[in-house]
Amino acid sequence: MSMQERLDIYEEIVALRCMGRRAVLVTIINGKGSVPSTASSKLLIREDGSTLGSIGGGFVEAEACRLAPEILKAERPRKISFDLNQHLSADRGMVCGGSMELYLEPIVPPPTLLLFGAGQTPMAVYRVAQLAGFNVTVIDDQPEHLNAERFPFAERILGASATLLPQLTIDRDTFIVIMTRAHSEDMEILRWAIGTDARYIGMIGSERKVISIFKHLTADGVPRHLLEQVHAPIGLDIGAMTPEEIAVSVTAELIAVRRGHRAEAQHLKSGKAIAMLTRVS
Image (tube, rainbow, N blue to C red; front, side, top):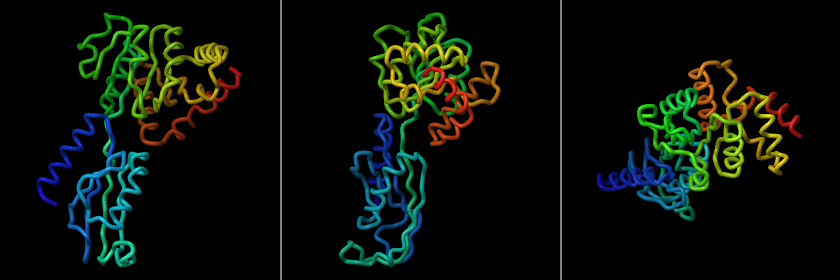
């Protein structure tokens, strides 16, 4: 692979990340014998299946393309090995021998955290989540709390309004945390959030508050299965009390969901969640 071809791939990776799109970068990290391409050759597999670059074509490249969706779903890199001697077949397009090792790396945009609320606890969540790699957008209806001094590294700072929610772009890389100053506002944001494609929806509050809001929403016809996906009370159960401790608890849960450990995150408070939903029924 020429230097220009590698530059093209790296430039494409930057462009994809800027557009919020996903891909898998495949690199040959080891090759022995008669292999179809050289070590360090690269192939970029976009989410739509289109590619840039090459690792030699044939069975190995087809297998990398087949595995790409799994890599993106797990958001974890994987190393795979091929004994090309086992695939020597003109019918499969393989005339090489030897062995080859590939490294498949997910290229995903940073997750977006929509943080509703700008008080002391949300500000602590903003700080910890930002350090954990989330692009944080802060949304609040209190102008005195919305400024760059309080949230210097926020992706965006938005004033809440009745028309704002439908204008927000929500996808599977979006995490929603609801921490406003009013229960009624939390409920309306939650009503909107559960109808989106957000990967995570969490709402702060006591068990009593959560039960009350869930009762109102179910009375309004919101299906129970939508409420079951809500993390409320929010955060992992670590006995957090201060805003900073709550921020650690909440961000830990965000990370658990992001990294595919949703079951473990839910397990720590599954008893409370099931009890609440049962009482709402």
